[in-house]
Length: 140
Image 1: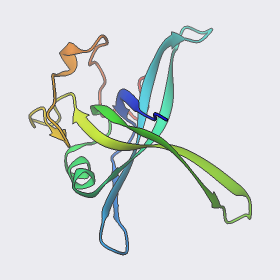
Image 2 (image 1 turned 180 degrees about the vertical axis):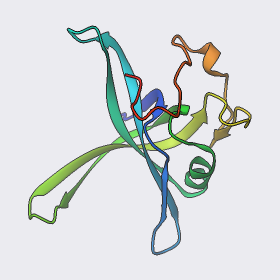
Image 3 (image 1 turned 60 degrees about the vertical axis):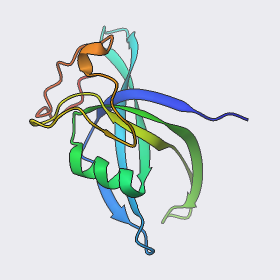
Image 4 (image 1 turned 45 degrees about the vertical axis):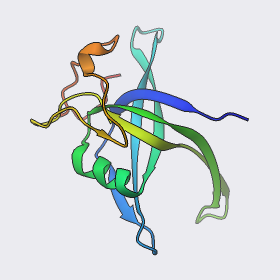
């Protein structure tokens, strides 16, 4: 069996860092990933995908990434189930990241990576880098 996923997208909000009772760091964030298509009104379409990062990489993601930053995530798709407060059974799909590469520069920092070296900047990508992180809405 093979379970591998690679995504390039922008954070929809700042990462949230937590620690397990045993002290392991875990960060979560959501990526907006452009589908490359438009709807009937001509608007770009996107998927919003939850990402989970563990341990040292979680700390780096939390420290250096903010809403609007462009990243590449490599990992695997995982499913988990839980019982909600209203008694219903819920299913959640999320990407457990092995590598998070920072693809653009944020607030004067250099291109870097958590868990691996970045291979290039946003100029190397097939789409532009015209997102204003001050916007309240994701650009697509």
